[in-house]
Length: 164
Image (cartoon, rainbow, N blue to C red):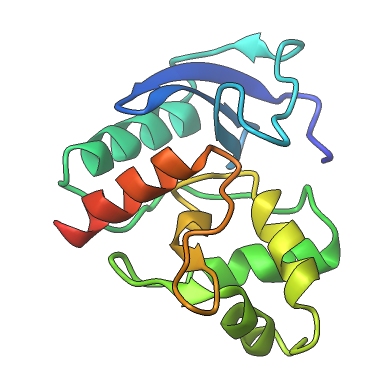
């Protein structure tokens, strides 16, 4: 994952454990649960909890956690992945809150119907959890398969959204 030289970070408490968020001057580039799979090493980035992008992201996520936000306005930079990953991640933004879709449906939507496993890999490496809603992707039969933050968090996020 590429990052700009001015990438900064902050910590955020969530109902499901601590998170780290990172941004550059113009957009959020990382939001993940501490210890999740494919976690980015953010330790070299300066702490900047008052950075405007990080402040906005934290405020919006806190609103989401208490059921007061369904959509996010914080600018995102998904350019840290391959062209295929970026296509998958952008498609996740089209999944409505409270809805789910399958990996196969995502592969169809991005024009790669036979790339279901590759879609699964890209979903698992989503750099901006919750805001880019990878938790809304489930198995073809509705099974809750995989989530970099752990299946209990995926269940909790889907339950939260079903009550929004």
